[in-house]
Amino acid sequence: MDALQAIRQRRSVREFTGKAIPKADIEKIVDAGRWAASGYNRQPWDFIVVTEQEAIDKLKVAAQWMDKAAAIIAVALDPTTKFWLEDGSAAVENMLIAATALGYGSCWLEGYTQPREEEFKQLLGVPEGKRLLTLVPIGVPVGWPTQEKKPLAEVLHWERYGNK
Image (cartoon, rainbow, N blue to C red; front, side, top):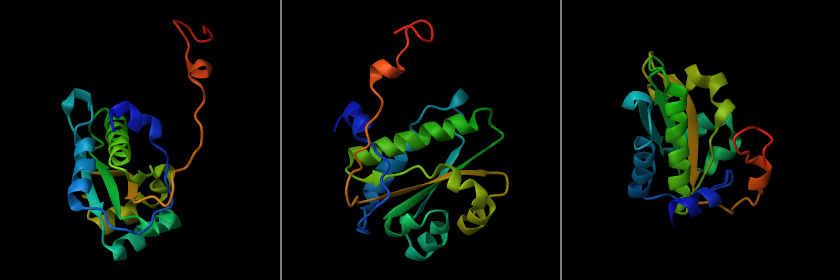
């Protein structure tokens, strides 16, 4: 699947079969995150892949639907870098697109991670000076959501807002 096709097909998948994903595919997904753009090329990220069900069960307090994910990728960042949020966001988006390209479902957990950041950092052994941006569950999808995106003509403006 080419990059543009993967971008168009990517959806937030919240229902997984529970089937395992080959380690090589998980590494490809994380490697896509590693190749993301980062401010000043600081690459302030670390990725923790969780596949053991006991740990997934502890993380799923953020979202019960994660219980059948094959893996959960925790994204930890160095907040002393100027653009750590942007850098982490770019890495996550690359991983979401890579997962789709490989035929796996994924979802960015966004705000559900933050209220439990300290708890999850302790569980995952994330050092004190790092921030936990998000959790990204990945798995074999039960099905693909079909939500539509707004048409390009509705969101595209030329030169100034409102110029269609």
